[in-house]
Length: 57
Image (cartoon, rainbow, N blue to C red):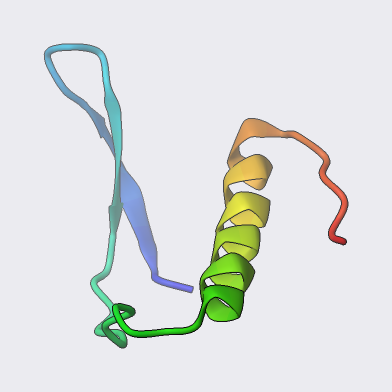
């Protein structure tokens, strides 16, 4: 997980989280299954920010 430094609010009331940059793999030529797995994991992380409970299949 990237380190969390804080958050700021811009002039349009959008909230931006300040995180450290982590160099990662370019994800352009992967299989459909890998894309689906990544999408599922991102949905789980996003749901935690929204306090939504989701079930993994």
